[in-house]
Length: 185
Image 1 (tube, rainbow, N blue to C red):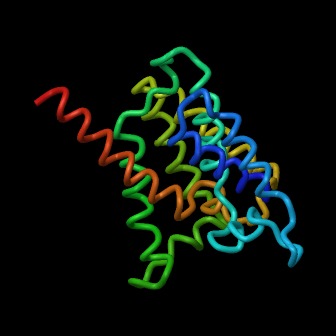
Image 2: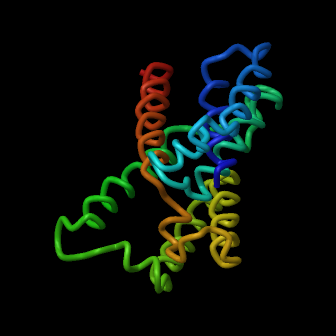
């Protein structure tokens, strides 16, 4: 999961750098692996700061890094405001409840996820009906990774969602929603 921090650094820098300077983002991302005098690296410090990203976050980071090298507007990678808004809304409901606001703890559903997987099946059907291939792939890979035991946490929620993803999705939902509103007043 230390390499996930490198992906995060690279994707963040690439969002602000012009395409001709992508090598700099890659170099700085890899430099984050170099141990500092105390033996820890910047990537290890970032992991300690905000923990491991979810499998969903890793997939979206990879999509973000690859997207720059595809033709503009490549249909499966276009993201409107609906998907990010759905993730941000789920997180806005999930995290307060998981932290003890109210009597229901949705985090417990992730250990015995029959109900959660059923809900994800409905979300997958909706994404398929709407022709949202990216969201179908994200969900399928999340579930495969969880079933294979790849994430350290046995909780399905940790595979699907993390706080950084929730924040980024909230920002994307607002930004993309405003862009859509400005195009279609």
